[in-house]
Length: 232
Image (cartoon, rainbow, N blue to C red; front, side, top):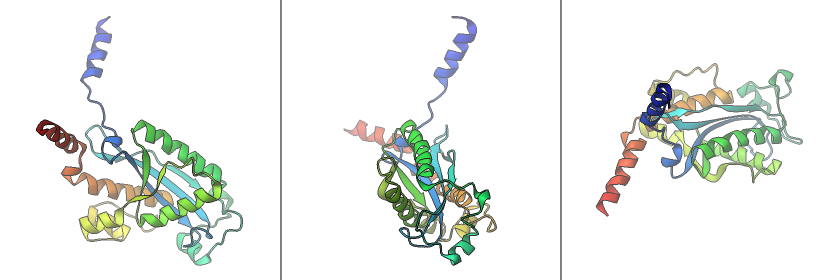
């Protein structure tokens, strides 16, 4: 073995392994999700846009944003489009520049990406993280039912992590823009109500709150486990 190989081997051995999320949230992979919809009824109103960002650890055991997956979606056949909702979110469902996909292939593409991350992170399920998370989960579940993709979705069927609750506890705020402001996270009202932007800001808020609580860091979790083992 030459000197270069010896050096590289030593460097690899000295570098600590990056912790995986499966060690932290009982085998759940937190995935921040935001949807934009043509109304409030998950079964009858169209899902128009969805974005997902998995939450990972960096080398220091701090939560960080993973790679986003995102889709503009065509209204499903027979769906209802509430004009007030469309005006509020600023989406024209039939604008060709949206490059919208059919619902099923869009979901399958997103699920495939998240499933890969889930396996890499040693997790059993993805858990939806959202701001008013059950709204997003309701539309996601309705889309899964319509597209018969129950066997492909990596998401837990009812468990969620809600940043409304976390932000209320941490900052006394429940509105996303105000919670981000309280957390020192830049927020643009002009860019809000786009799924990718709202997902990014919700993910930043989730990471900021969890990282600020030392007992939640993976090192502390590992130390607690070791102490319990030592006392047995």
